[in-house]
Amino acid sequence: MRYRLKCLTPLLVGDGRKLCPIDYMVWKDQVNVLDQWRIFRILAKGPRLDSYLAQLKNAEKLDFASWGGFAQNYAGRRIPFENAAYSTYWNRAAGESLHIPTFATSAAGPYLPATAIKGALRTGMVFAHWRDGMLQDALARVKSERVPRRPAEIVEEQALGPTGSNRMRFVSAGDSAPIAVSRFQIYLLRTSTLQPRGGGALALGWKQSPRGAVDGARPEESTPTFAEMAVPGTTFEGDWQEKTFFLEPEVRRSIRWPDGFNRAKVFEAVNVYAAGLLALQRQYASWAGLGLLDRSLDELEQWLGGARQRGSCLLSLGWGAGLSAKSSWLDATNPDYRQILEQFGFYNRALASNLPFPKTRRIVFLNNKPATLPGWAELSIDG
Image (cartoon, rainbow, N blue to C red; front, side, top):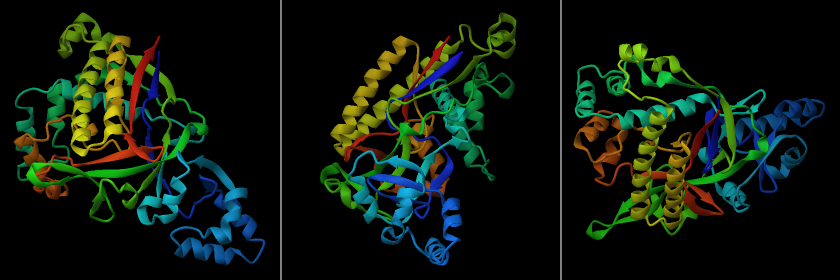
């Protein structure tokens, strides 16, 4: 069997690598990734190598007036911006926003790692099989003298079963086949936040680096982020296996799997999670007054209804999806959940603000307007 994952919004599943701003140049509204080894060999034949190496060592980005010709002649890849206006924002930006995370790539080309699919399926399955008392068990573990490295491991075992009989063993996915590099663009993302207003009202803000925010009506003054993402409509395909021997009556009873367990049950659990996550994101769009984002989420909800009829499922995966899309617990107002988060100092400042948690989202800009969330895709099986 084969799986097909279709991108519904811009998607980035990376391998941790980023394009450093001295390894590319922006020219003609596209990112030109320089073939540095070729450039070194050419400059070594003349007197300019020392000045080039000095700029690589000291500069945040290459001086286009001095080295712009290399962007035209010695680019290994050329990745277009989603909108021509983004080159202006790039020229004004500095710091980490110029380090562009890139899609996972092998020697054969860009591909979708199977771990991204399995991780999203697992998150949905844990969410759908949550039972009373599981959150309290996780809280007790993080409040012990020694906080475990994986405090929610017991929750996953209760939801899906221990390692030998974990229900996720039923399905197996392989890395996708490589796809064409033409299916990628450089997208602009900005981080939205919620700001308090009088009378308990909330207003939209856009985060600045390293701290602070600007008014929601002035997103161009906030700190931009650029990322290489697969465009909506891109399809990844790979091998899909289902270990049906687990469903034989004697085996199923020995590992205590429920009657009727199959792929449809897995996909329905994931769709239940997707529906809860979309409802949470629509509430955020309403608080922030992001009309285009709300419209995009409405379209995803309609797509979810169609996916259920087609026997497929909706996933939120990859870079930029945020904590909400990677947590099997969506009710951030629950006091036990907040106590768990308080054990990790990273969240304390956000929790102390008494604003909805999490109060930030990475928003993908389309045509220079805040339009959608990254990482939504439909997974279907052929054969």
